Length: 64
Image (cartoon, rainbow, N blue to C red; front, side):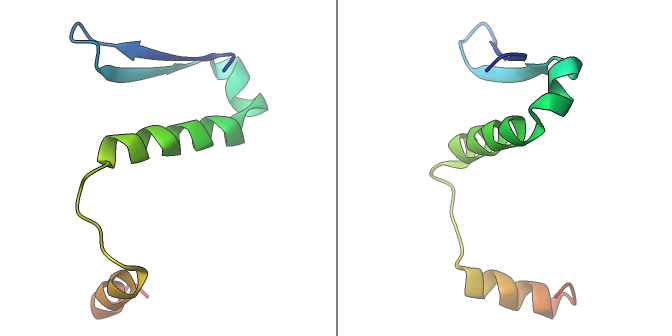
């Protein structure tokens, strides 16, 4: 994507996201979608909970 660069460390692991500020306003939604994808990729294999479980947990904490 124009204006966005993913930088890797010496072990070739994705570490940094460099965003051209001039492109940020033009492509905010695309950049957010890309960041969501990167976060999902990073969290792959981690334990998950159902939406019902999340809602119950948030209600118990008074956040819903």
